[in-house]
Length: 73
Image 1 (spheres, helix red, strand yellow):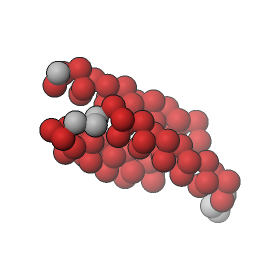
Image 2 (cartoon, rainbow, N blue to C red):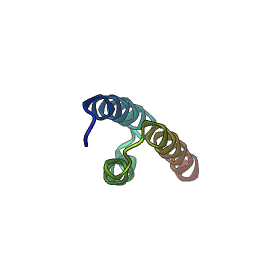
Image 3 (cartoon, rainbow, N blue to C red):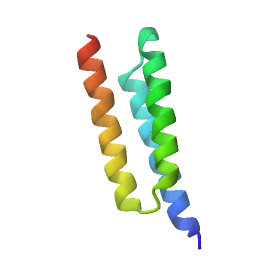
């Protein structure tokens, strides 16, 4: 059913990606985008059970955060 190792690995990845997105979108005016990205990342990440797909999702989320930063600068 549920593999505890996968849950731990995905949780650690989520924490690191959340910190990284927090660093990328650290401005006060970017706070609402940061919250929205992390919320969707959490919701979609819950549905993903494969570590490989979760890593791909994490990379897409980081690229999207960088894209938003470049657009709004």
